[in-house]
Amino acid sequence: MISEGRLAREFWIHGRSRTCPVIDMHGHMGEFRGIYFPRASTDAMIRTMDQCGVKLLVFCHHAALFNPQIGNAANVEAVRRYPDRLRAYLAINPHYPDMIKRDLASFDRHADVYAGLKILAGYYGVSWDAPAFRPAWEFANERGLPVLGHTWGGSRCDGPDQVRYVATRYPNVKLLCGHSVFGDWDQAVALARDFENVYLELTAVLGVRGPLERFVSAGLSHKLLFGVALPWFDPHQGIGAVLSAEITDEDRHMILHRNAERLLRSAGLDVDALGVSRRRSGRKAAESE
Image (cartoon, rainbow, N blue to C red; front, side, top):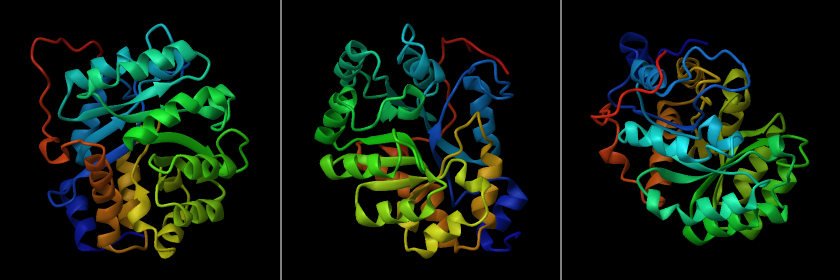
């Protein structure tokens, strides 16, 4: 379906919208295991964001998630190059408990960088409810931080049971279900309805016909967060899917920016001051497209 609504027409004509800035709550960055990403560098990702009106990207660098020698330094470097366009999730790797303690201890020193925490339980083979993750959950719960974790239907590491466990025991955590418990849409709806602190993030969901309308018809437009896992997917496609869905423009505003604005403000981020593409001087781009 091609939407003919006012907001969609603005995007179709101009490629972006002045009235509807986009906030992407699920990004990555950099190379990953030999996979070809045409826009994986920091500079290339910013150019992609400029093309389609993405005001802010909250991401976690692949190096932070999978390279303990580099760790979260890659996140810090990228955000400080583009402080008005990027914020990062601090990566939590359960196989390196000393690193978790070190990075959590440095969170406040990088208040200009971090918007929350990021976990990839399925990749690590460690369940959300494992003792290794407890310091991170307790830290986020004390501060009311967003935590983005990939979630999948049927998973024993980050499936519906694990989401319910964490949401119950850590009610102050803003729990962002990356991929929206992908494939188990009934459980995704139930979790977002049952827990005030559970949100559904839409990476990969937007490539499937039907789930977005299902979430909205269930009364969950205020719990949905736009994301495409750039550079894995392209925000043009994701935005187009939201614009073409059989939902209202009010729903689209909620999904594309208002829910994220509310969430980030609750975590202490001045969202209104962001969105201008201004790279700090004196730093040469480390990567090029």
